[in-house]
Length: 87
Image (cartoon, rainbow, N blue to C red):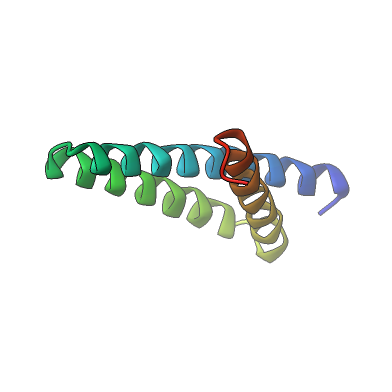
């Protein structure tokens, strides 16, 4: 795996992370506002299934792509936290 491939997997991980953590924020806001449990659980399931499916597909490529994607995923966590004002 070269540097370009590692960067590509990091970007894919960042996209997965961005979607995951933005949906997490939306799930929390829905729960706090008293939205129906069905909608909250559906969004929770969608968020988890998307992350698991994405990482499972990446894991088929090997350990280094998985590690690169995880780094991107965690970077997205900090970016989303900063964007919504948690840090």
